[in-house]
Image (cartoon, rainbow, N blue to C red; front, side, top):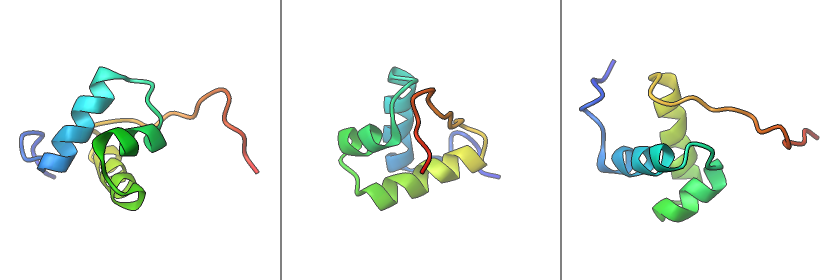
Length: 64
């Protein structure tokens, strides 16, 4: 497992945005970070897998 200090520049950017706004939606995170949605989701999922961040469903989430 990577050390928390062993993060890429893109991971660092996302972490800053996440910790600045803990309730940010992934879609908004991608836009603010200036990353393609697929790249952003991949990075977020890696951070979740490493236990650095946790995804939570909003109470307003609609499942189809």
